[in-house]
Image (cartoon, rainbow, N blue to C red; front, top):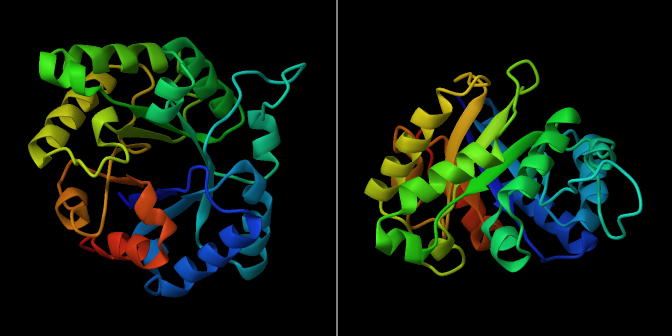
Length: 254
């Protein structure tokens, strides 16, 4: 199975800056890297169309993801962007449940579950994020907390509808802090979650990837990405630097 490296640009870059970064990253990628690694970029909504146009016209092998999606299909929901609108932009993935959406915008499991289903209905692969706070980690309740996130966030998914799914462990305490979960922590959680999901009716090991996100950098990428259970990484700040992001991609042992 191909590894997947996703660059989440968050609330950074206008569409012109985004094009420049896309071109720098593409120029620096090893030849035929797409045969072994799937490279995905997740810009702001305002940049998706511009990047898609460049990718299509230049026949680049980089794919796109949204950073968010509305739980609603259409209607009087000012400021929302629907999965059907995103589908017209030819994106392949959509991030849902990111810790910043959960903590800063109070998105709960029911809303996240709606968003997952909207993406799947539009044949966009969800990048489903989950993870515990430092309080849950220290109290020892983190596995129970994570199990509830998985059960509620992925409720109702059907095997005939799920074509591709990315499960991203991103502990809240490691997002943008420079703190990184130990390999033991990562393996423990992903193994636990994989066991839970293997019992779900939609499970298919050929279409589900289990990845890690949380202060991934060129310094720790090799250890994380070459751990057997880890199928890739969700990269935040380091993805805004073309050299660092490509170094993370190159850290995968082909």
